[in-house]
Length: 345
Ligand SMILES: NC(=O)c1ccc[n+]([C@@H]2O[C@H](COP(=O)([O-])OP(=O)(O)OC[C@H]3O[C@@H](n4cnc5c(N)ncnc54)[C@H](O)[C@@H]3O)[C@@H](O)[C@H]2O)c1
Image (cartoon, rainbow, N blue to C red; front, side, top):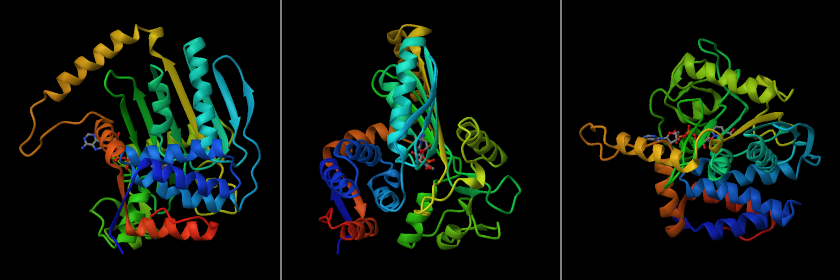
């Protein structure tokens, strides 16, 4: 058995669509979900790539869903009920709604309730940036972080992405609110790797470098009380505005047989309503030149703008494919066997 498997985007996409169509999803929607996952692999965010499909396949063949519907809408805002359906589908609809409104009225905001895991936050903020807009996307998630000084998990690792259009690539910060995303702990535990210090607590709230203990424990918030505070705000944006679940009402991704009550929040703002888009992109260029010219410490070859590393990986991986570990492949092959489709590799 190999340690690493090299996969192309086409292979992963074809395989992913064949799996989700076996899970009663039509081909078009399966394409939207799988493209979002594979885009994360291409951008180097493997924790939120094709690997996640195993959760989706199991959840959506276990739980009853309702059609995604618009609950209320006016010129600039929109509330969507995802009907416990795929988070990626509801979020794509929601961000496209926000963009449509921003195109017409300058800004658009969409809130989503009764949803599920939406993958990487970047995918939606990028949709806005690709249309020349500021995009913001955030979601709440199952609780994994204690309030600052608390002993029990109460906060989700609620990621937020903010994207701006650039000339060569968008500037996009997409980050979870813990020191690292939970999927990184999952991968460390599975691979038998030790965690770097400061990533996690054990179930007693004590710092740990044991990945298995961290799986049963909690994540350390980014920047101490500031990260914990950001998590509160993202939870309320996603959970309270949509009159959805928040804090410990949002269930974990692995509770396949129960509605998770995940909420999302999306904003699009048309840059051209403030200044011509070309002029804005020139400003981004000049910012970027100055940023990259900052003197570097010894051993640092390059200073990266948010999203720059992912942009470089995207170009490389689109051409050369990406690798999945043996453990990830074993998970994907297991789900392939469960649903009677061919192995990915
Ligand atoms: N759906 C969910 O419930 C959920 C929950 C948590 C995380 N996530 C997703 O997990 C993914 C990973 O999150 P993360 O916090 O581990 O991301 P990360 O730490 O890999 O990157 C965070 C940001 O820092 C930038 N960055 C990374 N290295 C850099 C460097 N050396 N110099 C300058 N900038 C750098 C990246 O461009 C990125 O914008 C995200 O896509 C997030 O949306 C999703």
